[in-house]
Image (tube, rainbow over all chains, first blue to last red; front, top):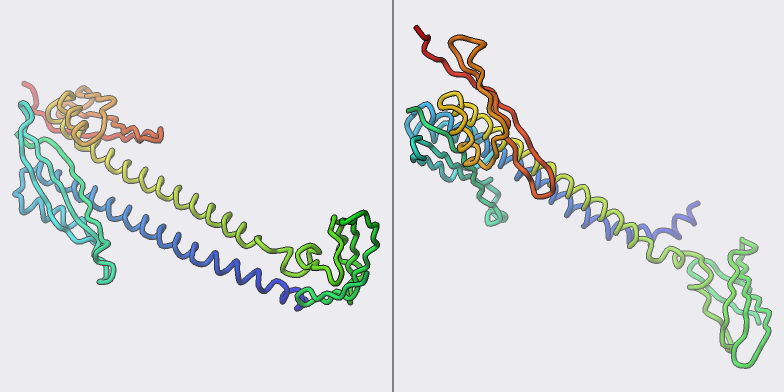
Length: 123
Length: 176
């Protein structure tokens, strides 16, 4: 039994040496995918809540605060409220831009995402 | 011909080679006998006749030599499996995000339809990246409210369609 294990020792080491970096790399990719999806889902909700607040004719500061309150784990870079007209309608577009803060060696890799939502205003 | 050969940790004590010589090459059958096993492998190959020992390490299939390359195959299978899992996760995240965007478009379109009617709601859905499939105003069930139901959808490149449904109501002035 032990002799058989010793025979296979080199094969198992080679397998581990090949598989471990691939497993670690793919685990990092999956973690990043889940983190990015979570961040962007928060942004969609933030834009949604912001445009609902803008529909109530609240001030721009209130709209920004409403959108920022939705975001818990990402850093808000900008909340842009744009009011315009579309034919006879008054519309408001709320765009939220944010990114996940990363520790210093990885800070340059942080990507900023933005989401917008548009609705009509109270006449 | 007897050949002494050491193959990794198994010593091949005797290689018995019955020869049927024919010119420079021979049909050679080799029976590999080891210390513990009476017969590990039978090897038959055409070889040029040579004096001295015959290297049978890579041909007899004993020790690590028979497993050479198997780690690479298993690694490729595992990496392909994990890449497939990653692709499915990416697709799932894309669908979840699109679902949230479509729901936002449907919610805002429903609020717009409750205030201003269905034509502006279609435009609002389009500006939020969705398409308004249906908009139905139901003002008869409650005298003071109008309810609208909207269905919005987004067609994804890979043939998926994400739909959302929203319902909203607004207070109307009672008619005299």
